[in-house]
Image (cartoon, rainbow, N blue to C red; front, side, top):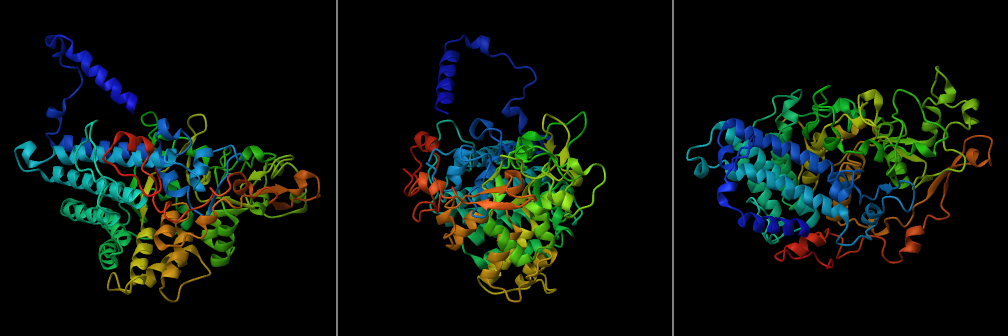
Length: 583
């Protein structure tokens, strides 16, 4: 950034040395800012840029994070206690693993990427909000302009809310910033959340409402429903449970949202614009027109989070699986066992979220099966060395469970077969209805249960609806905070809630032992010590990180409640005070 500022200054000096008459040449095909922010069409174009740029920055900032993942997903998921950061081993995804187990410094790329993505979105929002005013236009705003400003205001509020959740006291930025701007910290995290709530109130009168649960367009633009959801989440963080309930109740009683019938659709192409979508950023493949969605759906995500197929003896070739991947995230054994104990092995949610090694071995079609296949274990499959983990190979940071929730499901339309590895066919999900129901249940559990609709939709009923859709063996009979916390971990796994929820609830014991135990998964058949497949956990080097980085691994109270403001930002902005114990 310093280099960019220096280049800007040098360029300015160079221009001042030129003949002014030679500079006053209109650039062809370019509309000046003074000419642009004038019409309804301009307002809609400017808001389209907000949506597009926000989606691309959330999905990837290669100059900071590289191409393997998006900064939004990393920021909101990589510190969770229920995943391993895996990859090929200890030398893979190193800065991301440092973030995961709390060894990171204030120059780590994960906080920097998230911080940058949110403020880039804020800058684009401010261009809409600041330029479509009565003072600048010399007239009242049209309804279209008012709606676009309201949508930008909500997106800006969401960005600030997320910054407040992770960084505590981020600068509240309401103007288009110049290069030399030095915005200062906000007063407190609570003040950020109240500002977010107030901004939503300003926007609500001019927002559209989703038409129905089947309204796709109402899921891929900012509506009253999403605005109320943001307000409810901000007030929940502020511990204003009455205010949170009131806001979230508006989403529920609108009748414009519902849980999808199948939990197996969550995070996949067949849930785009679904009844459960409160807001997601749109990405539509159009052959011959829009064929490269990678910048909007996570660049290399299709490889980064898919299973590490190079360690298998061959590649399953059934209709569900897309071959190729680097296996960056695996469920921890603790999470998998807890999910099975809570839901049951045969629950719809368990089957949608994780797979066991035996399921991969026997319920998927491998090349040795030929063209006919019947799922299930057979003696032939048990002794087949061409399926499962290969000789001399193992699965790092794995206890015999694989992520199934956020990997490609070819049979659900996820895989666009374009480019070197293909692309995800998905929208970028920001908020789904299940999270709204869980937040409402929590607000009720923290205060008093209330019927959101007048038809029996209490906080307990919200919780039960999620559990019943999951096919869970455990359905709550009383609304308690512990019940909500338990359910939220399972339902929202890998959807950006876990680590900050634990910190907010003061339940950091598991984070304090993050990466104390990172085993490897192997197969005795591949090793030649058994005549049939027998997966097992090798914990001989599971304490690698605690041995290698003694005392540095794990959440530290008084420091890790908040992320550090990125070092480069602190160096450039002398008005910004660093978070405690991060200098």
